[in-house]
Image 1 (tube, one colour):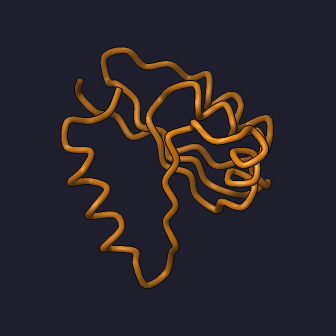
Image 2: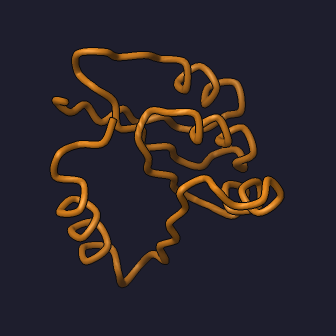
Length: 96
C-alpha cells in the first residue's frame, strides 16, 4: 500500500516543513491509549490507506488527514469517517 518512493517522499516532507512542524512516526503497534493520544494531538496525519487510519476518529475537529491510496484500487471509507468527525480529507493517489 505504500508508494514506491515512500522514504524519499517522507524525507522531502520532513525537510520542507521542518521549521513549522514536528514529526512523529508510528507503525500502529503501540498501546491503544498511546495511539489514541497521538491521533488526538495531531494537526495533520499522513498515512497509507489501511486500518491504522481508522484512528482518525480520535482527531480534533478541523484537522487534516492526507491519505495515500492506490489510483487503481481506491476506497473512500476514510473520507466518510473524516467527514463525520469534521476533518478535512485529502486523497493522494499513487501507482502501486
